[in-house]
Length: 517
Ligand code: URQ
Ligand code: ZN
Ligand code: ZN
Image: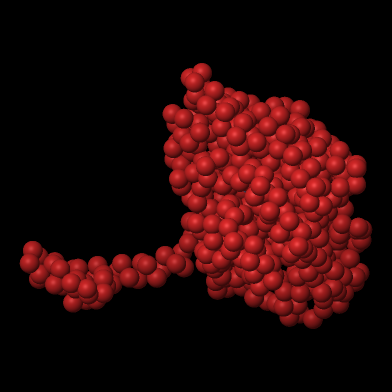
């Protein structure tokens, strides 16, 4: 009987036979209650996020602060190329002026930033929100992942669209839908997982009509996302002709499969098998291969999540030879080592499983050094969160542990503490590697990545004399574990402004689904 599911008549008909009248009435009420709950739930997504409140800064009712006029007073304004003590005046989401002693009326909300740094909000070039992967879906969606980002001083991210059955447009539509609940600005890269006569045309449409200017090729994840060199060459040539940037996940997927088989045959099924099955040499081989093929095609190359000395040295060699290669370390590779993967407690060890794997002590220090001297150019997170239940899909076979770690909320703090507090880089370098360089590479500078008149008002106020502590208990991601659990450090992002609205202050998040562009 083809009646619409929620028509009253269907429901009553459905139950008349077995239920007494009072029950039916209850049923109707139950239906209204369910309907109201459904409406309410779309509003309450955000209530699952700790520290969230709908009351805007300096406002009484819900939502981000709507006072569109803001003055940030007396801070040290830092851009990638200079720093100065100056005020920043904002109207309607745009920076109007940056100069000392700006006078304003009393309809302007004033934030005191004396003794603190006023910097462009972080831009994370590498995230996976609401991504279907390895038989499950990342636990953070576009709302929770972005809310976590904002509470950590990141005001934009660039996510990876995965084609649907190889179709780029279908993939784009799916991700555009996911992103509707955004509470901060975002961009898209597109993965290429298959090649046929349509893909090249679709890449052109993505570049010319959909605002995508970068495409990612996976040389690992055999049987799912992995592509071969023939496709990589075709993809690089298409990127060259379209003026798009080729990005690569560089691990030798065939050798990884071999390594995995060997571990299982040795009876090693735990998370440590993950790191043992894909050693740094397999990352170095694939990075070198991709770099040489990019020079053969003569097109720039962006190497994502550089996790080892092996890969970093391939990039450094190519750059020294004048080749346009960009290297992106991620926070996990910069500050962690592989010791956690050997923890006897599966839940603890599995949270560190990502690819390429987090490496032995020493690789992280070398990546920090390469980043501080410009051999590597910007820092991402590869935020790709699966909670402990999802990770347990691989409880008896590490090949089934969904790969990915958190970081979108912790990046700005961990880079400040590890790289600035330690004196490895300056404050202007910090802005360069956490915001400006990403904006420049993906062609959104200076709208993004700068505190200049005319730029979007995506700004953070960082107090260098304060400190932070990371725990899954207090973080804003939806996952129940955190690979930086218990970590403390210097520097605290006290205020985050996104699109001219104060969305994070005094430990409170004020974000609304649908405000991100
Ligand atoms: O490889 C990636 O970048 C995705 C699938 C995230 N997972 C990971 O382990 N890096
Ligand atoms: Zn990857
Ligand atoms: Zn990734």
